[in-house]
Length: 314
Image 1 (tube, rainbow, N blue to C red):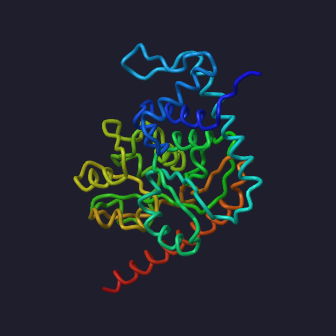
Image 2: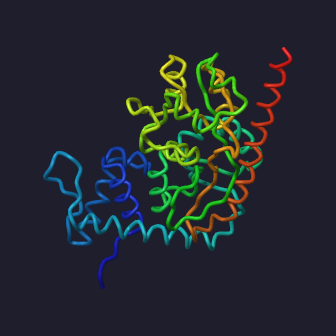
């Protein structure tokens, strides 16, 4: 009989592949480095092949290691799906690993998470912030259960549910003629020195597509890694930018001393949604979670409207 690798060994190996470090992988798996290293050696011994190339200073897999990594991800995902499908747990009880992109996390989570623990007291929520591509990979390999993302985005093998539209607004230095207009047209954006997030952030692609802009219409000499950096560069007078409404409602533009203006109808927007792996048994969890986040987003918008009315009266 062929000796089979254990699921624990495969989990440790995939953590090592993902982190490319024995110490970091051990930390993720909540075990000592020696325990993880021993499990990897046992896996190699059982398969009769070296999986990790230990002849170089940098982390590297052998050809067999690459093959095992690809197959192990599928095996663990199916095993996890099997365990969840027969579990008697109620929705949103126990651990749930949730990924969130950086253009959503700091604006929605502070609003939503305090009430989430009260509404679902048995939920153990683990959060991870990362770019969309990285979160999609973690969803596919089973290390994440769900992810708050912005759409459109191609997600093979994943399902998602809408939470709500998040329109783009123009943000410029206080007193800018652009923000004094009732609505800013696409042609106006082409005349502005428009600053956007660097390549790799899906919001850059969403903003360009939604506003029917080309890459040439954006200032190519600067690409920010966060919306916070963007607002500070705009504050310094380097240009203008596009911000999602949820960030403006959370006070990002006001805290940077920027003025904002809506874009001409039809208002360009991104769609916020919650994604999960097909067949994972998480559909009911994600439907409840999406409904909760939908309410939190609406409450944030209502509070922002109230603040604007009070400011206009003052």
